[in-house]
Image (cartoon, rainbow, N blue to C red):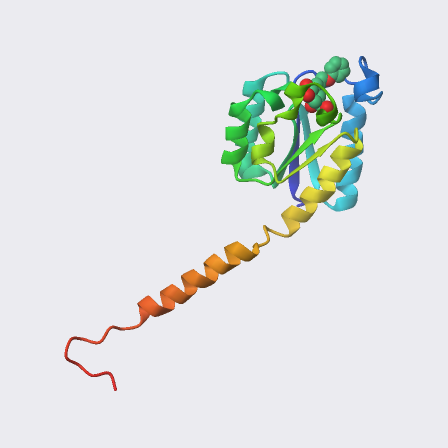
Length: 180
Ligand code: CA2
């Protein structure tokens, strides 16, 4: 069975394609869902694409994903800038998370520049419209296939631990006994 990725969309994203096309484009959320299905199929993964206007429902879905999904892609809408509950749920999931925004949140109002979601995300894609979801899927497919790479510092810490273990495993000679 292919790995399944949860693609979550937050408040008001169900309105896509109906208003503010100069910011969010003309595609509807159903168009983006279809794009994701197509992209996922070509990457050999599956998507579970959802939208909710309720923060609680989004938190519940993230909690459920912990045991049944391989990763999460999230456009939390306006909750991006307010929700510690979503941040905590994402961190608790232990899953790789990619954050997506249709618009470039850094070219807009000041309050959109801060994201709680980013603190849980392995990567953030914004300003590329629906293509951002495709890119996020490609990125998460690689993260799923290849678990987290060790950085030079984590590798150094592991080496140190191994060396310490070897040293402490050495039998200490009993008092007064010679070892050679
Ligand atoms: O750019 C994005 O994807 C956002 O997550 C969209 C959110 C916004 O609050 C974030 O700052 C950036 C808003 C989604 C509302 O979408 C609408 C679409 C059409 C008409 C009205 C709202």
